[in-house]
Amino acid sequence: MKRIINGKKYDTDTAKNLGSAGYSHPGDFSFWQETLYQKKTGEFFLHGVGGAMSKYACRTGPDEWVGGEEIRPLTLEEARKWAEENLDADEYEQAFGVIE
Image (cartoon, rainbow, N blue to C red):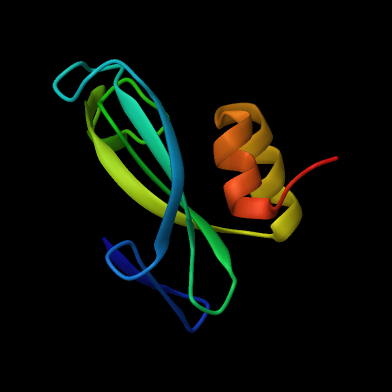
């Protein structure tokens, strides 16, 4: 997925994948998956995708929802917090350095 947000380009094909978290599988209305990425410039962003009953759902009409996806830029602190909550220790240290 590729998006321009506030004049900056975010592209999941060219950024480094730092790790993912999710629930269930595509096709399940409650399915969701989030992946943390880092751009070559050092900026972080989160790519999220999900089913019609996930936080990524899109309203298409009265009481009608479909799955959707989005890219959200993150600060360094937001990226670290997301990684602490969703990645294992090895993935975290690979992304942010060894913690003593």
